[in-house]
Length: 186
Image (cartoon, rainbow, N blue to C red; front, side, top):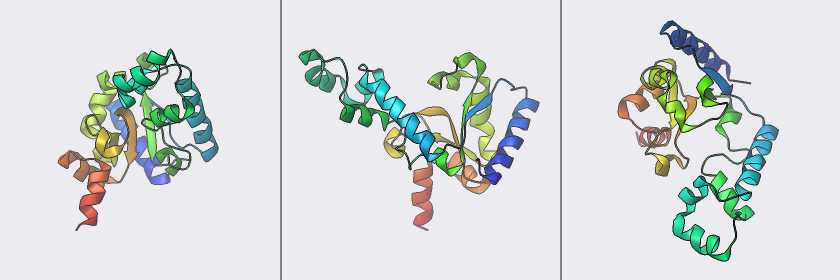
């Protein structure tokens, strides 16, 4: 279940979005149980083991894929490599922010039911980019910060951190990791 503070802020944020004319958006994922995350993670691993994806090429680089797979006429990842790829975009069970009840994933009708970077081209993303912090939410995995967050860019994934922290993160153009490091040094 979504944390009560996050849920209240989410409802207020969705109402403001609608009032601003952005109605083609809905929450596709919020709280996930441990069991659900196990299922999600395992399904991603199975998918990555079925072929060599663009994510695998991004994570390992073309030369690794060429030397360890294609040159050997192997066209499916090992489980170990598949798990490495999956961990670039999905948390291990027990480590998912969705299990905290503080995160939501947004989707629009033109996304075909899939969470893709296409979300960044929507009115919802444009609105969230400028207003989510006012409700205590941050874009959790921003573009260009993959080396800091440890995850690929996810324009659809927002985390509730409270207004004060969200404002500091927004104004400073930093990640939650950077914010936590700054505040722990004070």
